Length: 306
Image (cartoon, rainbow, N blue to C red; front, top):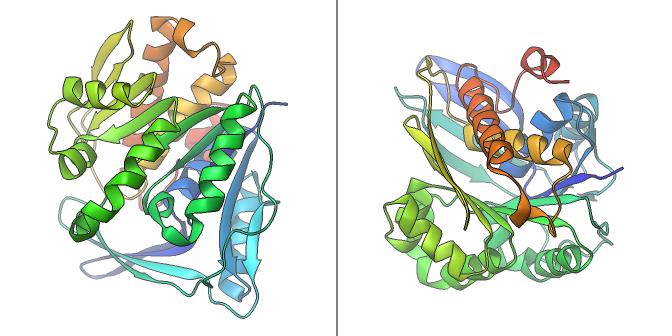
């Protein structure tokens, strides 16, 4: 059976708003995507790292309960699992503080071997981290060589701007390893000073990317390929938290493409109706996540899509 693999950071998200804590839940961008997919019944595995502590045990158990394959989760005995504190403002947008205890020698375990029909999602700051860079890039190159479809989400945060000159070569290499990119207007503005979907498309296309999903928060989302261009508005919702919205957008896109059997070799022949369905499903997933304090689609929402 074709599989979806997401690879990235695993941590415990503790979400605060004025008045106290809203939620404590497993988090990390690629983990959030895996949870949304698992709840929808998709065959998904999460590749990541955790400490050998009770917090790590809770995260593993929560992932398994949501239908996520945890076979490839790496545990570091004697280390504490990462924690993120998310402080929400009046719009539901988050400012993060991270607490990590990872070893210097990381991701040395044997990783899976995706193949034709499988999908791999990577991104966020994990994909720019020097300590995991070599094994991550090797994994992506092997995945592409074996026929897997690869998607990249930069998910770049403003606090990392002082490191931009050092990180930008990694971002460009990541683009060159992806068939599909999902980036927000903020990603492209911070990374490249680009402020339109068309400019973002020209940039990613020059790195060999075949498909761009360009999202503009609560405004709209645009799909661009060499053959197609579609823009769909985002419906208004009452926002509780934006944590995980982009991650769940990715889940909606991947769920649609996986169910349709889209492969790396067939991506350029995919018709506009399927791309529009993927775009609208991504928007529906992201909008839904904004309406509650969790960072993935709810089990009730997921049941309607099984």
